[in-house]
Image (cartoon, rainbow, N blue to C red; front, side, top):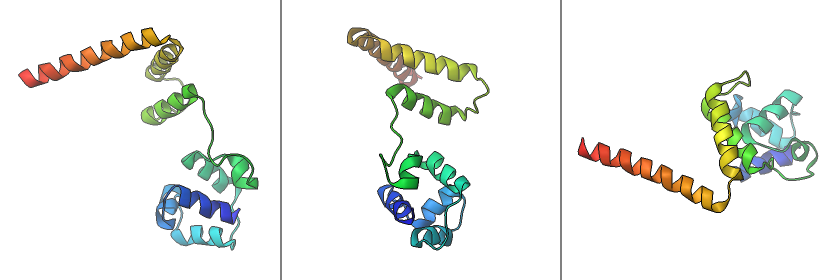
Length: 133
């Protein structure tokens, strides 16, 4: 697993210090993992997978993709959760955004174009209003 930790860090283009900072550990701890001096606990593995979107099976065994593969809907949900710091306990704003994105994703291309044009017009209207102020 030590080689996979090092590979992950390199793929993410992070120094040992930056990798450590994201996980809340010391830089030398990362170095010890990479050298195989210290083993990773299940909690650390969970933290790495959560923080960097890593496939736990790959981290533990080397099998599969390095990163979790998500559908477009899951990807949107993931980013909205992060943005709103959603804790899974219900949030009307989160639910509304997810429903809007699901609905948009299910539209045909013509309908998506209409929606994009609508929001472009709204953004242009806001920009024009700001320029006049």
